[in-house]
Image 1 (tube, rainbow, N blue to C red):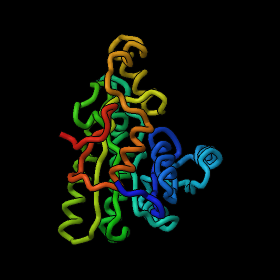
Image 2 (cartoon, rainbow, N blue to C red):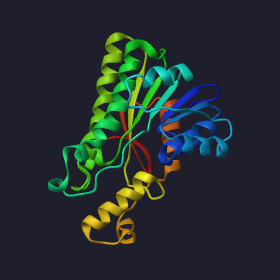
Image 3 (cartoon, helix red, strand yellow):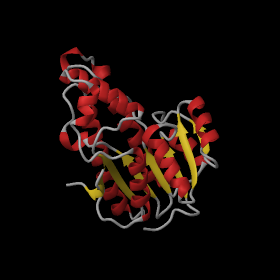
Image 4 (spheres, rainbow, N blue to C red):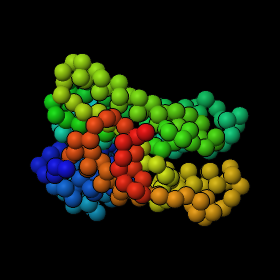
Length: 248
């Protein structure tokens, strides 16, 4: 694995949770890091606590977001970790807006930045990592709306973007990473734990106790660094408590 020393790393959705752990991992490898998020206050807190990080307040679902981000820092490694909270209700109790929230956030942000990269906004040798979810492979819980489908689409988008980059000779690498277990201590994780345990009629503690081989946000950060600096073949990967692996 190569170091990220001297490289530019942009983490969209980098102010909290998994995104913040990716920021910290990249900083630890000597990269110049730009954290992008919608919330200015969260970014301010990050800049106080993570020495040397650059920040940019921007909504990744706006069509102009890639232009703004790339003007702030031209990335060697671009990580899309931004995502909405999944719904938490039976399908029949959801509106379409509830059901599609992860398509409108997670997938749209990934699409906009992958499209910009394929349009020539990232230099040859650059890498794009989309943060997906183990729900993309398992289907996720039945109260999570379109979440699992959206996270699967991120995997498909990485694969399609790679094929297009190869066809055009752009010299870009596109990858998707799926953390396999829901993670306590993150906003998305805590919401998911509460929603799934309530749906199943068990306590959050019992739900957590039922899971094994659980990765931490720090494990995800290390996996992204390994993907960005390594030569593992393929476009879809998983990370669990057992480490980084190619997706089956």
